[in-house]
Length: 189
Image (cartoon, rainbow, N blue to C red):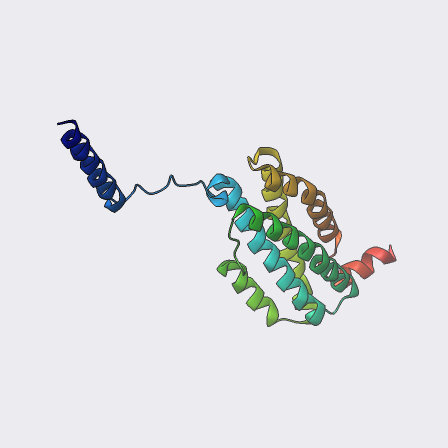
């Protein structure tokens, strides 16, 4: 009897093992990816900052070709350098955290860029300066908010480190006269 019982028990265990092997196992616990670990507000900041930086670089490259003023070209060259550096830093942070950044500017910014491409000389300079004033006011506000209330430490730190450069850009473009005549008349006094 003992032999039958142990044989039956062994058969039962074997059937249970086979049944268990054929039963689909529960999916592994979903691991929290880095992108979902980054709060939505911080991801939004990164996306907006990347798109705005791309617009700054695009507009500055046009300014290097279409501007009639050396001060505007000098400013544009600085925009290309500073915003390319910031974009590279942001891409590195985003890649490490699994955040996907846009590869281009927003459609609204693209329309502004397209309009700039059609201008040259004094008309271009005025539109570019006005656009840069508005863009840098928005950028300073965006980066200031992230540097104060961001939850993701890397993005918050990036915003805090980049903010003084953006504030400097805003001061530069705000001080720049809209036309060459203003510059000439202000230096003649």
